[in-house]
Length: 170
Image 1 (cartoon, rainbow, N blue to C red):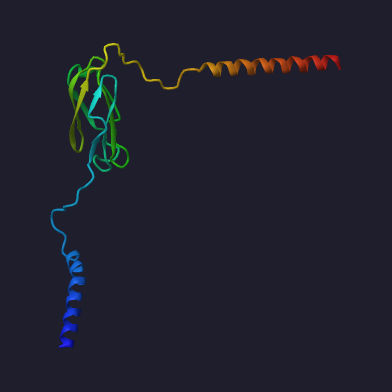
Image 2 (image 1 turned 180 degrees about the vertical axis):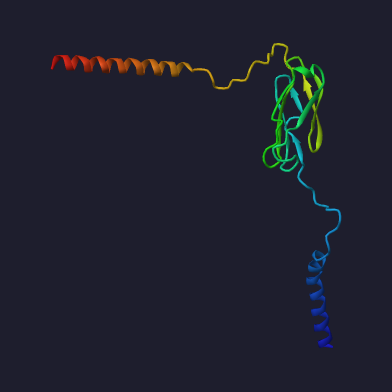
């Protein structure tokens, strides 16, 4: 009786431990049930006038170095701006979209190349006093840079004058 109980316990233990192994050994199903990362992301699907939204396509979405055609539809769409319509060497692409200064409502940004996609971006009207000026790019000269340049030039002039005076006295 004891032998039967021990063998039954061992058999049950083997079955309990073997079940996960058997379950993972099943052939892969035709449909993968795991969630895949999204192929396209829109960082800000709702923006205000003068703001920018980026539509990003993951690696391999387009062909490497592919020129992608972009078409924008919406209020005053002809004045909307975008950049980044060429895929990189891995087929990824990031397109920045900026609506026109007087834009409002829903815009569809259609991209077509080896694959197509249409992004919908909603533009809310900004404050009436808001103007869409050019973004500050750092191309201007800062006042402290001018001051430093003037002081350096003055110090150099003083050193040259002192050197010339010293040579004349010797």
